Length: 114
Length: 113
Image 1 (spheres, helix red, strand yellow):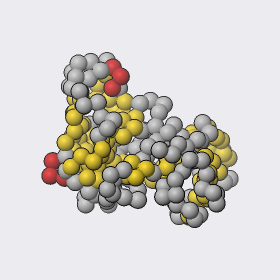
Image 2: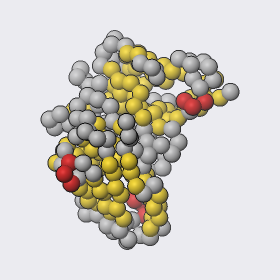
Image 3: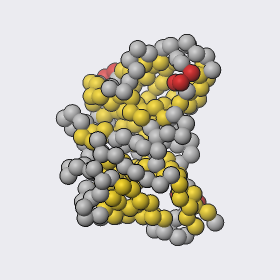
Image 4: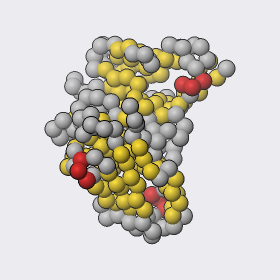
């Protein structure tokens, strides 16, 4: 079974630039998550989709971050404009539903903002 | 949200059992305990979860105390590849069927020769 695919693997940008990350979840998984992991910390949920609808975006900095999940499959997470403190690994995960089951994570995109 | 407390780091000799403790004294009756691990430069990986009863799978065993205020993840025969950060998480039920996993800082397990 193919895992969660993310790209790019690494990205370096300057502050105030924009950046986008892409995620392709496991086929058939209705729920998709974006997490931010700052060095030395555990992952923090940014946004959760159920199919193509947003379930939880309470920790998404909406003034600069946006995410969409077109047709309930692939998803993109965008940052515009980026700040130094956005340097982190951005992890995408998916699960079959949003219930009591396991999440499958991709390897993440490591973002460095200079 | 129920909070979890884990030791910052632990060491274990290869071939020995690794016992990773977790305190979750404010857990509610319908909250599950999940364990994930994160090997360097990879995304977290699901290990096991449970509600009340002890659970075992091909990776590990989960022992939950009768009062559910703490649990222990057991890796029966640790190998070097088990070196990772281990996260104990109490699952919070949010809207509808959506559930939210809130990660703490975890326990860094170092398996040594």
